[in-house]
Length: 256
Image (cartoon, rainbow, N blue to C red; front, side):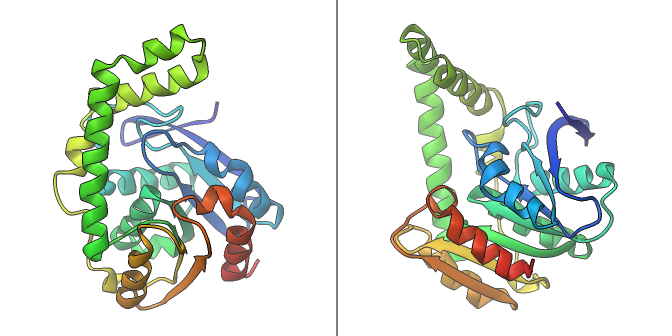
């Protein structure tokens, strides 16, 4: 398993494609997600086009280590930047974040503009009224899930039913939600900065039926160089259910 130690944490990292092409770094969503959601959907096709792709599991997720603290978007952004440093990536990279990963990608662009060539945000609210409501809803949802996993012993019930793979996922989710500061970190303060300060190109991809569709308009209004693409008939499942359309949109935006 490829491993990188950054900021004192062991991260699971995968790279595909040539070392000398443009670089796209993928950032996945929260709790039940990991780098595998990108591996065959976007990363492998981009690598086949000559793009260097870097995938990593956020701290506490997938096969990365699970420290007890450090789960704010700013922490995740600093993790990403240090992983790139350890990998020896010096040229500016493109970031592609799905759901919460989009927040991390945008925070990284604001934190280190000299290291980010552009950002693709897929189904993420990175500021504004929609972003505030999404943050509140996410923290509330995770809190309820944490209580359910701890007191209903969901993973034990799944094991008893022979659902071992799902039981392991539930056990990992419980350890993350109940054994770390993730929920407190997410609710500890605003996620968002002034998006008008983003000085790289941004592509926003949203489902037309998504509860975050209002974030598309906010993104276009705030970010100086922003292009939007709306997928008809879908909600928050663009990556999974409109993979081909998303890939074509990213190809066109990157011009590869």
